Image (cartoon, rainbow, N blue to C red; front, side, top):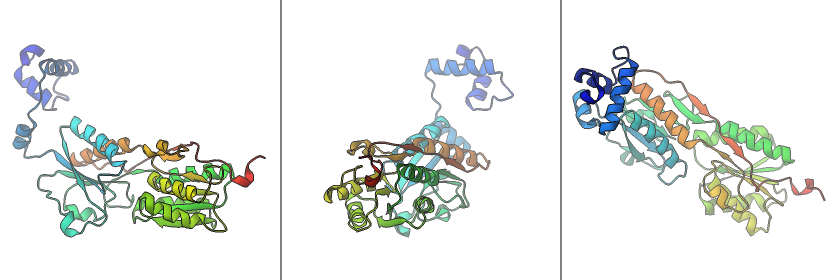
Length: 317
């Protein structure tokens, strides 16, 4: 490789070790990297890590492997980690995980990237931790979705259409992200919000939505904490013979693939899940380098589709 780049072996070692700043010119660094690409060079990470006494492995903790947003979060995190020579171990930590199920062998882990922690940061001992979609007051750096802003966007959209009686099918999960969604919606419709809680499950959400809709003061719009919950609200509306959006507007949250599979397609908030994973991994790597990353709140995007319209009494005749 040194011959291909026209430099000394020591210069190649300095460049490939990432220690060239201030010691090797940019032109020489570029020549070494181009030679490495041409020759198909790949660093022996195991040998390097053994020499440095590091594993270069981080743990990504998620509540479930089936949630639609966690795949993109992993993809974003893994891409950033790989660019820095780190591997990612994925570990599910369900809501009902007790101490025995929650134990993780942290000896081979350098840091933790955790989403919606159920146990707590202290469960990872002295390891550096960055948390995602969690209370910014946590003692660790937080990288969040702006879920309050997303819910305010939904509320503003419905208010502009003329809705005043709002039903909220809320996730029965004791997590910061869902508490914030509920608070933002209640602030937008003070005194006029009707709420039912549900598991994040279509059948359970159907029953919760039925309780909201089968009442004399039925809401003209139902706001759901999750697109899967919205699918349950659709089934409840169909069971009661209600047209969406003619008789009832429905909104979701997350904009997973299900949102466009529903008929009519679902108005929802798109969350930048892959970007969240990438930003959080960048923050964790900064923490491992001895720097203190700043907290970040990533905005979502209101995606208006055919599931929302003016309330029936406000429609032109």
